[in-house]
Image (cartoon, rainbow, N blue to C red; front, side):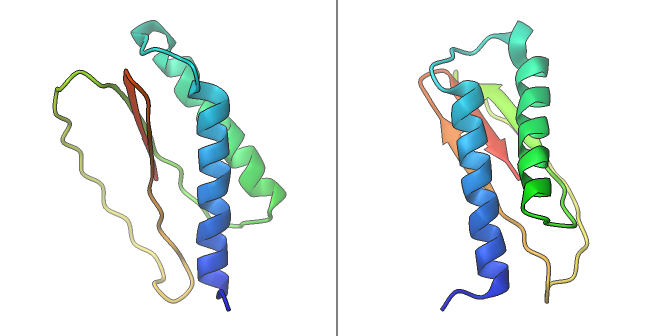
Length: 101
């Protein structure tokens, strides 16, 4: 049987994957659209998380051009390992790489 943490993580991943598909599916990388895509994606994810009454969350989104260039990033978070979860969803097409945490 799936525990509460596993269930919450699974719900989050489904929400994120659906939001990414709705916003980015069929799109080609366009630097001029990045800010709008990220804003729309985060808003859609936050709205859906609120529908599920998930009370505490941080949403971080990175969209980059898939052209062989590298990306280095770092972040630090502190949470309650007993009750909080962390999940990463990666999505890509021919020209876009999107990672949401």
